[in-house]
Amino acid sequence: MYKIGMIGDLESIQGFMALGFSTFEASTPAHAATTLSTLVKSEEYAVIFMTEELCAALPEELARYKDVPLPIITAIPGKNGSIGYGMTALKHATERAVGTDILFQE
Image 1 (spheres, rainbow, N blue to C red):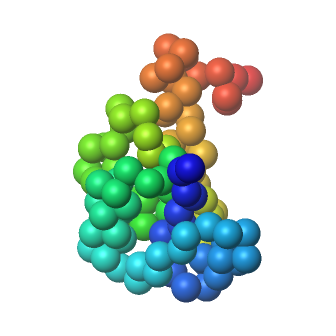
Image 2: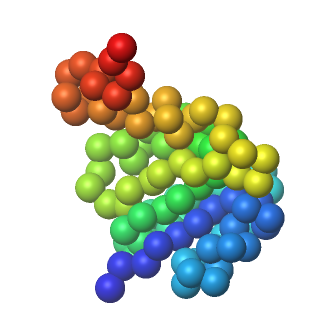
């Protein structure tokens, strides 16, 4: 059975421990990149959540996993709230899949 992982600063990941997620503290982008690589190579994780701050600092690292079926790597707001990275990533993924921006049509 696959696991769900969470990478981020301690304050952001503490709540996920109670939900049964595997949590990994990473205070720097370099540490987060190493942790992410380890989790992907383990092939045990279907979903990996990372705080937006770490995702924003690791565009090249995340691009490596953009076209693989598993794991799904998803940005979530950290302890300081959203910085907009997650919504921007969702918009780009939708445009890539559908061919147009269907989320923010006016």
